[in-house]
Image 1 (cartoon, rainbow, N blue to C red):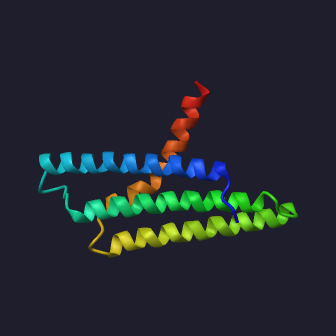
Image 2 (tube, one colour; image 1 turned 90 degrees about the vertical axis):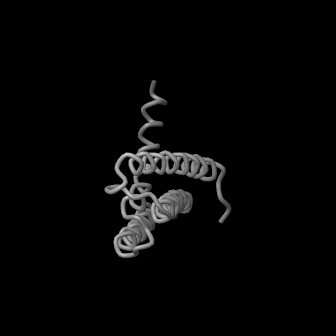
Length: 133
């Protein structure tokens, strides 16, 4: 299946915003670590969690875009609904697996691994508000 230009463009926008938000998150971790070194850590685990979480969030959005692109030409409405439901369930399970890995693996900081999953939704909402104005 060829990737449509709209899916490519929106996925790229999400990836760029996600990486920028990850950099801001890492900067906040760094500042918090400098002000409260005993309470907030800043080491490779924070960076690894942030980068991998951001990549997963971006890939999840791309997967959603490809799913929508795939069902646009579906024969029936019911088939399109079933395909989107399956895609949603699979994407949710991947995110749940990532949440569990963040909590279990000592190499990944829990907060920095989970926070990036929220970045695409924040970007979409902010962009929607800004486009209205």
